[in-house]
Length: 293
Length: 326
Image (cartoon, rainbow over all chains, first blue to last red; front, top):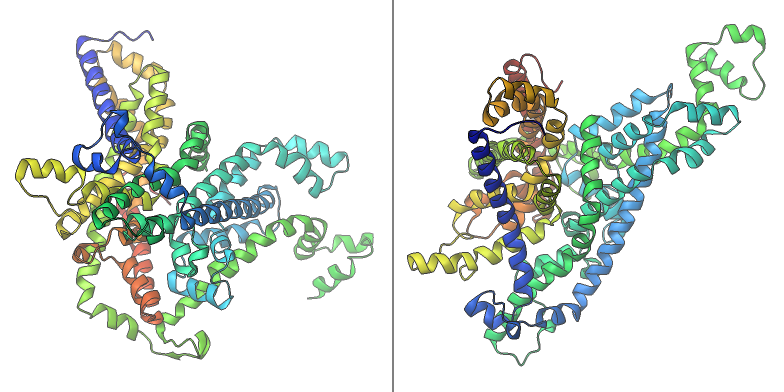
C-alpha cells in the first residue's frame, strides 16, 4: 500500500469504481425486479409496477405454483436427475483419473488420446439420438445420465489434482503392503474431498439448469424436469389450466399467468440461490484448476 | 505371438531366471497389466461409456452419406455419396441459415471477448478486498441462472406490455417488437449472453492479474506512470497469452454456437435471423424425421468448426510471435 496516488490516478480510480458500480447495477436490477415482482399483487404490478406498500403485496403466485402438480413433479425429477447425474459422472471421472495419474501406467497415452479426441469431434445430435433410441433408453432416466456422463474436462481436473498428492504417501503405503485398491480408497480419495466437491457441484448445477436432453429423450410429461415445466410456463405461455380455476375471467387469467412466471423463476432458482454464496469460491477454484492444466 | 504365449504361460508360475532375460517389452506390459489389474478396472467404465456414447455415434455419422431408413439400419441403408450434402448446399435455406449462424457467433465473439478483460482490469484496481469480493459475487451470479430462466426473463422484460416497453411507449407512443422483429434477435441474444457470462469469464483474467509482481507497479509508479499507463504496459501484456488461448477457443467454437438459447428465443416471426445450423438440424432431424439429411447438416457444421479452429490458430500464431494453442 505504499503507492502514492496522483490526482490523475485518483480520478481514474473514482471512474473505475463508478463503472464497476454500474456493472453491478446492470446485473442486479433485473434479478431484484423479478424477485420483487413475484411478491406483487398482479393488478398493482400491471398498473403501477413495483410498489413498496406492503398492502400491495401478495403470495398468490407462490400459492398457485406450490399447489401445482407439474411443478412439484418437475422439482422431484430435477433433484433425481441432478443427483443421479452428479454421482455417476463424478464416480466415473474419479475412477478414470486415478490410473491416468499413476506414473508408468501402461496405456496412459492411448486412453488419453481416446478421451481428448472426443473433445474435438462428435457424432452429432442425430447419431447420438438414434443410438439412445436403439439402446431402448428413451423415456428413462438413463438417457439423461449416461450419454453426458463422460466429461473429459472433469477427468483432466481430477487427474491434475491427484498428481498434486505427494508421491511419498503412495510409496509409504506400498512399503506397508497396501494394494492399489487400498491406496485409492483409503489415501487418495479422502485427500481429494475438495475436487470431488467441485466436480459434484458443477455436475449438479449443469444438470439442474439444462433442458435439452430431457426435451429430446423424454416424451412422457411425468418424467419432465423442472426446466421443461418452466419452459412451458415462461416461453410457451401455456399455463396449466388446472392451476387457475375456470371461473376466473380471461383478464384475471392473463394476470395470474404473469404472476406465476415470476414466482416460478424464483422457486426454480431457489436451490442455486441458497447454495451460491457458500459455494462460489469452490466454483471459482474449479475454473482455476482447469486453466492450469 | 510367441512372447505373448510365454507371458501367458508365465502368469501362474514365477518366471525362471533365464527366461526373465528374454522378457520383451510386450510381456513386460502384460505383466504390468496383470499386476495392476485394479487400475484397469477403475478406468473401464469411462472407456466403455466413451466408446458407446462418443465413438459409436461418430461411426453412426456415416448415415449422412446414406439413404437412411430406420428399418434397414445404419449398415443396411444404401450409400448415396454426397447427395445429402448437395441437397443442403443447394437448398434456398442454406445461404440464410449459414450467414445467420456465422453472424450470430462472430458478433458474439467480437463483442463478448473484450468485456471480461476490461472487467478484470477494473476489478484489479479495487483496493479493498471485501468490496472486490462482493462485486465479484454479484457479477458471477448470472452464470448460474438456467437458459430457460434467462430467456423467460427476456420475454417478460421485452414483451409488448413489459417494463421496458412501458417506458418506450411513454417516450415514443408505441412499443417496439423486440421479440418479433428479426432485426433485434442478434442484439438481444448477444447482450443477454454478455450479461450472463462476462463476469464469470473474467475469473481467469482476475487470477492472472493477481500474480503480477507488485514491484513492477511500484517501479512504474516511481517513473511517473499513471494507472492507465500501467494497465496498458504491465497488466495487458500479462494477459496476452490467456487472451490468445481464449480467442482461439472462442473462434474455434464459432459455428458450434449453442442450440439451447437460440431455440428458446425463436418465435415464428424472427426466424430469418434466429434459424441457425443447430436449430435447423434439430427441426429437420428430430421433428421432421429426416435423419440422414439432418446428420449431413450436422457433419457439415462440425467440419467447419475444425477448419475454423485450425485457421484461427494459424492466424493468432502469426500475430502472436508463434504462441498459439498448439
